Length: 272
Image (cartoon, rainbow, N blue to C red; front, side, top):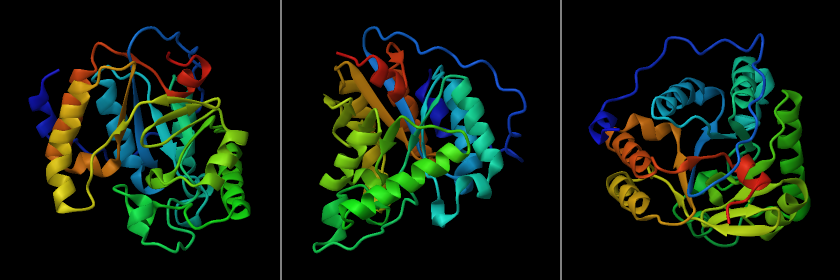
């Protein structure tokens, strides 16, 4: 693939695809062999639906035949099934074709209050997205349980979880270990209680400095990754910036010899 193609913007579609009428037979999980790459599209919710479908199509054109969608169950506390049945139907169809779904918090917005600056909690990942810092175990469990129930209402049954802003707490980790097969943080993935170290490669859009520095850093880290797993995160806003889009394409070029997997497949047969 040519990195130069990444400089063009993604064409916007007039309408999102229709909900599924007849779903294809689910694809079997593929066996893992050799170095792997897993791609996650974050912040999937009704407002990002059009952009997410564009990103998924763009990835398919670059031979990424399965991805993980990090789905927000109730952005702005509006359940996904009531707010956008089309999105729920589209996600079901994508899962049947081999993609997977992860729960991405409940509403992807700060819910608790902490005694130290929010920026310390969220690090480089966005203070407003840090949903779980400041919540006790009961509040944390209620949010996770509610989000999971909302996804199951629309026949999406996530096996994994990605915390908004990658902001984890001891309470959240404890809840996830009981309810999910895997959860991913900024440093790696926890698979059935065992950690696989593999930093998430991601871009930044929240400040001018991040917009300038994150594309070359992502490209360099992708080309420098020699481990068994390369993790690439994509946010809808990344595709609004040509340099970010080009960096994603360069990262995919660096991973073109790797086996494409989802996190669900990793949890079924972890990469050693």
